[in-house]
Image (cartoon, rainbow, N blue to C red; front, side, top):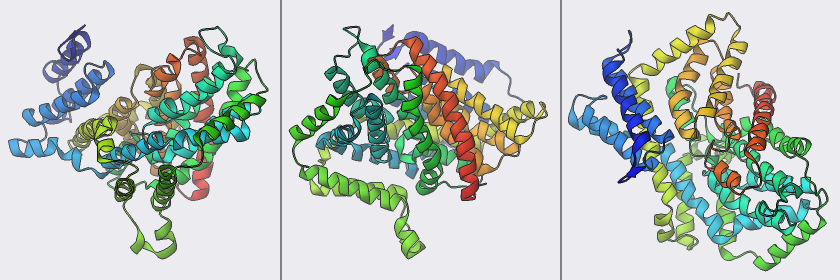
Length: 488
């Protein structure tokens, strides 16, 4: 039930949780009153996000307002509002917001569809080949689409559905198992992997970068290039495995699809030659990747280093000047502006929880409980990461999960003796890979699940199996790869 813009039941629950922590639960020894009260506001905000009391941007505005009026970060009213608005000055937040605006060009120009159909035309003679074509398409556009929902649900999924329909595979006709069931699972399970491979592939990744930097006193600042290189090998291995694993568990009835390649070629023929807008988009993507990877600095020295967010602004500027995107397009990109608002609020609250010492206190509690088990840091980190990962069964938002738990679990791992960069990269990967678990794990999942090709039972079974595969690859292959790179 809703009253005005608020869902009543989850709204009441979030208020009770907030007031209970603030007034009823005693402040633990070693924690300041302000830190505990900010935690109450933070937990209440997370509960409101999970319960979808209001749109996440609206909840963020309420959180900013409460931080400003309660003075939990600063006794001065002017200081409190400055603290409450401080998240908007974080460049990583604007990186994601601007990148979402840039990715609008994929849909507007049709370049995203062209990429998908192109790879299907190459690999689409077998059903498993279509799976790999969808995977490669996701990978190609992932670096410049910070909305994993827009990428997996808005670009790749319609292509997948059109292929399935062309083979007479639809939930309405009871023929999902022909090919649609398989392709839907591949469509979904590639999405968490590509999200884990680039800072700019899903919105919460820059938050992880900031939390790691804060926890290590800025001794570890993961760049776009460092993240991409670290995730390259484990990511490619996971992508190579997904179509095979899904094929082994849920083989499609139709295994040979010679018509799929012809279908994709016909779609490309309908699209005609690349338009002016598509060519500009390709050029901008190439420019962004070169600059984000730090190629000029590698070739010509540190004087040519560029800021990652400045590069995103450059890309958007080019699209505006060339007319590929209009200012109206930018204004209409509601998800980008929404992300800037809610991201700023959550980053602000997480930052001050750290500054006020709450994260250190909680991480010490976690570390102490794991340390009592008497294991080495390797086994302890395994327990830590597995706990962090599978708790996502209780979350419907990766952002809420990461905001609530990442900093404390990362700090606990450091106290257990784990190498800082190794632990950061492992938890960063897990933060996207955990999307595989359920049909409500992230925004992409209800879109693909809602198309009806996969039952809830099959979805959860496949999700758990892929969680084991992905975590194993990220921990073993990734760990060895990071050792070779000298990251630990």
